[in-house]
Structure formats: structure tokens, C-alpha cells
Length: 182
Image (cartoon, rainbow, N blue to C red; front, side):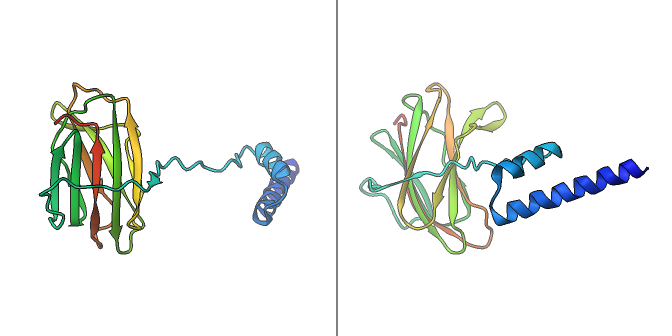
């Protein structure tokens, strides 16, 4: 019984030391060693969010596209264009890719929301299946951002989903998805 209490006190002291070192930002090696001795991992979680890269390349909508529409999609010269004004979430119609990749350039603004996302879905029997790793996150600062989705099947049909995590504010912006058949 005495030994169990001593072990518990020692573990509590080691944990307190580990937490104190973590709070002061020093002693990373000691903190890792103590955490390992206690069976914990002090490794921080890695952010795997696919943030689109800033670009200065403009999105030039095809002539005749209504840039004031709440939601519209137009295909021209191998590119799918989308315009959104005051939406929460929308899906494009299905399309095919001309190769094994799709390059998306997007910009947008929204009150109270700092980012939104574009994700690719593949048509399957009975519905649609998310394409793993296809979500690109776009900052809502009005600047243009770009990301590429690879490993696609030209024989398959896909759709893009534009969305963000808010039911309180609306999203305004546009995108171009280069590499579609049409």
C-alpha cells in the first residue's frame, strides 16, 4: 500500500514538472523524457489542413457570365467557373476531368468566417463519395488562392462542393477549376 502511494506521488510530481516545463516553454528534451516515462506523448498534433496557396493570377469569368448570380456554373475552354453570392453551401453539377488532376483557383469573402472550403466528390452508385485529401481551404480575405487535386480518373464523374462551417453568415466569391472536359 505504501509503495503504491509513493508511486502515485512520484508520478503526480513528474506530471506536474512536465506541465510546468511545458507552460514555460523550456526543457523540451526533459519534458519529452518525463512524458515518455509516464506513458504520454508530448508530440503536438500536426495540422494537416490543405491551405490553398496565395496567387496573383486572376479569375477571368467567361464573357456573358452573371457575376451577380447567387449561384452559377459555366464551362468554357476546359475550365469550370463558379460564382456564389450569399450562399452557405452548394454543389456543382457532375463533370469529367481531362487528365488526372484539377487545379482550382478561388477567392471569397464572408462576415465572421475566416475560411471556406472546396471539396471534390466522385459519383458512385447511389450517390457521391468524397475524394480523400481533396478539400482545399480558402481564406475569406478576397485574395486569390490555388490548390491542385491529383490522382483523378478521367473516366469518372466528379462534382465540387463549396461550403463553410456557419449557418449565420453568407459566402461571396468565385472559383475556376482547370482541367475539365467541356
